[in-house]
Image 1 (cartoon, rainbow, N blue to C red):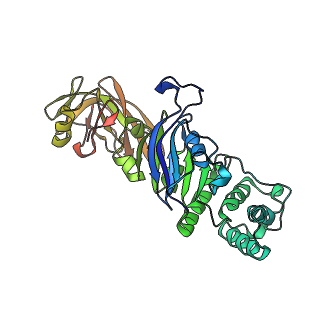
Image 2: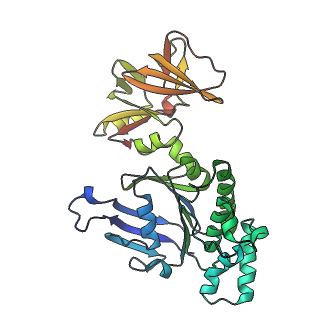
Image 3: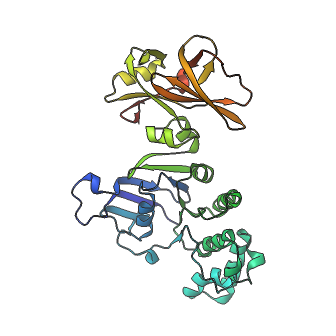
Length: 361
């Protein structure tokens, strides 16, 4: 295992990048702790796989250094880095048995047969593959094949990290939960460094101890699932995390009050004070579950208009028009929804302020 450090990494697929717009990755400086479980989360095209391939050695960065512990591995190929990579589509030998697939990395490195047998059976037991050891891989279901692909990485004792590139994309939805749970169990048992690329926030938030959110080639926030949900440091994180995502509305400040067209929304005094010193476009942000809806005017409420209701079974999403924007309030199933005039309440403790897309703090 190893601590992986990215020292001012940047990468362009152009031979002679002339500006920042030419870079798929823009100066990433980060350290992955030994034994951590990380998820790289972001939309397609944000740079997740590019970054993973730089860590693994499939790509050499245009700028910066990659270090495993204190060793510079920037120019080393994957086979010199002692990493394992699990791809979206399982990489295995269909004509071999499950046992031979798992044993292949060890045989290729000249391990003794007795040690190979012991290690293969240990890994097969961890992955629930023992009943299939003598079966050919070709006849197995997609989830079993992906377990074999994972097992080929786990079977080696010298791996610095295991890298996952959207490994559950081809798995049936009803099997994804069990495989995510299995990955979590394996990490807790073996304490290997896991880096997991996905665009699915559910996969990222349920698997990782730390989630690394990427947007347009940059890391915009690193934190626990709770950090990302409660205190998004970028408007993209607020929008991308959660279903539905965070509401945003343009505003200006007057003392401790945010003005959104004619609406006046009171803010936490400390937040407002920092906001008055911030530069750039100001926006309020609030999670739908924290936005309160009332059928009558109450202290701190602002008038709004209900535009529609989406019943999602366990909750209802109410679309509300305010200051030319459509906001969403998430109400528990059974909660009353005003049939006429409506008012919104923005609890100050859950109302965030952003300047040019960045959290004011």
